[in-house]
Image (cartoon, rainbow, N blue to C red; front, side, top):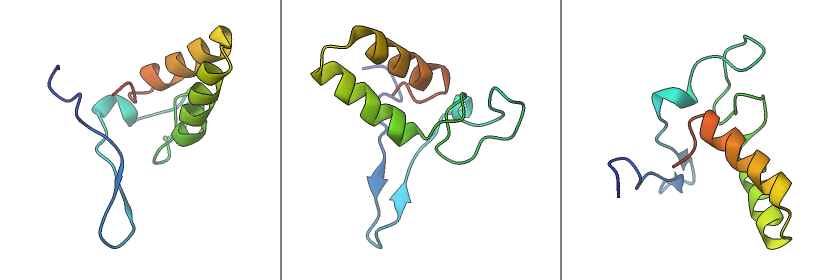
Length: 79
């Protein structure tokens, strides 16, 4: 494993979501606006894109899976 590959989103003891984000996951989206927490560069929620990736893989939809993986990777959520 490469350093940093062990990151994941987890829930804290109080139920709050705790995430470690890379510097690539911050900054501006494709529209030049500051990215919200858990937003991809395309302006999508990273959890929705992650879910789309899982569904596409289960359904053997290579094109959708490739897009979702690309969106997550370019937004700093490749881990």
